[in-house]
Length: 185
Image (cartoon, rainbow, N blue to C red):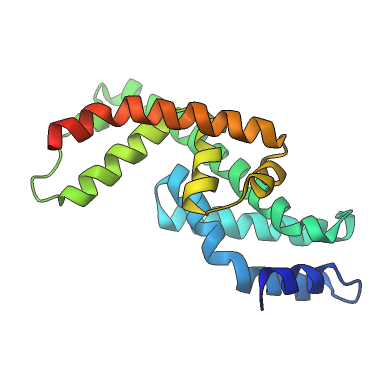
């Protein structure tokens, strides 16, 4: 079922929450997990984030004003829940460092990593240094290939803000990754 046909089907009043969310799940599960993987950096955690978003939407289905916005609501829920996971990890890491006196991030990288894995890690690390909104816009645009309108809808911001965050985020990534790419040449 195409996204357009799915949106029309989900918005039909005859669909129950179970039917509508089953259709959304079948059509968008993988895309939503991909959205969560970048910020949380773990497939299992990303799947949990997406599953939690679907459960929350199911419990609130009757209060959803515009069923055509269900996918945007799910995307926003995934983004928000991914942020919560990140915040939780920061607190846990801070606590572990304080209690152990060691920094788990100082372990040397394995020599067996492939160049592609190093580049991916560099990109993910650079994305992690961006402000939340810039990172979210870039992930939605380049990883999920959403339009400016879809990104604006997902994040609840104006299209002009999407353009601004994308421009600033791209410039920051170029600066952050410039040395990485030069070192490998």
